[in-house]
Length: 109
Length: 112
Figure 1 (tube, rainbow over the protein chains, first blue to last red):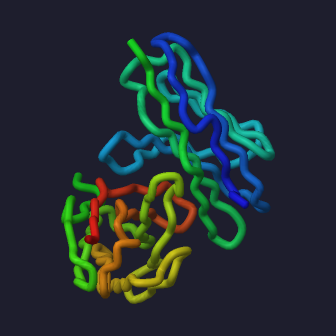
Figure 2: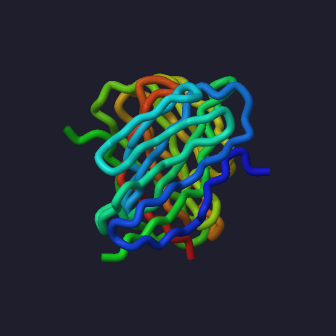
């Protein structure tokens, strides 16, 4: 059973069409939740860290939120340059880290 | 500021050959790790190190070897390459476990 599940797996958006990506987790003892952006042929690039339920972080058109069982990455008025795969990872328990499989986002001009 | 640098970018190996993927970081991070990324599988931890001279196995360590003689370098060795090791490999570092992870650009390895 996956400890971190991201949905939807793939998403096509029109430019300007806001949407949200979901990262749900089943681990106990969450110590931090990370969001990364990965462009094709590149390594993941850090976006946000969230530590406790209710916390929110923003960067340009992206906003990450955290509840006790899931995190959302909201993309507001996306542009084509927001096209990427977004990865979620949870740090929990005895220094354990688990990644989700990613949300592939394509923004169409 | 180079961050995490890994080489080579691309490599084709024959089954049974050995090779080393190089990784270096210039951020004075104690924690370094190697991941592989396969379609539909997400990032999986191969080996990690919490400091010079200290290494440990991750989720998928079989067929790989690591060492950490300096803080900066963390090479990954494939002992006898198998087609199942065809993957994209990422080296990563962070100040400590649970800290922000910085990834290298990736190494695409094909084993034929």
